[in-house]
Image (cartoon, rainbow, N blue to C red; front, side, top):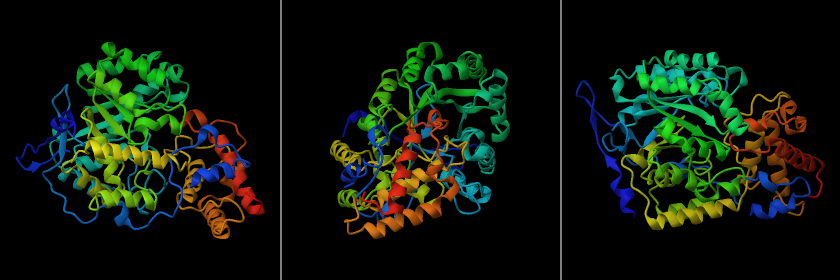
Length: 491
């Protein structure tokens, strides 16, 4: 194990103002088979084809071992000396009263359940909570502010992260952006924000959009002044998309003095992001550039949109054979937490079993060994042999002006690949079963008027996708596949 990694990991407990102890915290063949229907080309992604995935929660989550309250691993913010829990709570998948995630559902947020999750996380050492004005249909900041205030603890005992999510051109004016900034304070019920981010830089039209959102209107200069005044304790940005924007911001680090940067990083994207999508950038490069400058990395998508916990039987078996007591998801969390420049790893945890499993991975963190690193690289290569569409269900592509339910269409297609319900031809022994599973499931998941056949290829969704998916091409691909199944044509 790399000594730098081991030496950088700290296990500490902290006291609050009342002196009460708490802790911080074989689809490759199928690609050819339906190339006659649509071109996979550059829009393929990471996925898990082949045999059917096990449904048992015990295969995905560790639900048995006890979770200690005083063993959370912490990382030190080099600027402030703050001890930040290696597990950060991503507040974009808040539970609803219908027992779903508010990211996927329009149902009312279950505030009591959210309070319980935040309390449990805090009691087990989690002290970093990441939200945004854009999350949960604009309700995440308020719900998270309520839950954190409900803890009844000193404000200095946890860190709040939120963002300037001025994606829409209607919010690019100085007035609208600053209003969004001030509104976050009100909703979160705070007098200062610990970690504030320029949200989704690199999306849309790269540097042109970045300049419109932050430079031309003077908003970045305003935020720098807010940091000087102490209302922002740490200023950074979250990166998606155009690498020119990332590089420009780091080239100007001496001017802006970024306190942290949020990047997508997992054991697949480390070396293979470009294989997922040619416009993506390998996390190895992103992390390396931050490390050169001593800028802490906050990590998003450690599970690649959940796909690294939702793997096929043959991958599960290999992971379980190597470490029977560990969950599938824990491999991804331990891998990313083993890098010394990582300040915290964000996870959107809707349900208690998700939270508990991640706490087991980080209370304390047992870094992966050099052999484990090599094993996970082999696992990444195995996963790449089963391509799905790299949709993380962020819903930034919505609403579609023609009413399509884009994320649900993509996720249903991926689900059928993951479960092996993609027959190669009518001669395939599973053809009838798989055909029915695809079509019946498609009809249940997406109402007829919102399916892929209604896409006219306007491209309105494309610049909003952080994964740079050519959504119209994928809609055409899926529609052609569905129509072929309906007509029972040779695939």
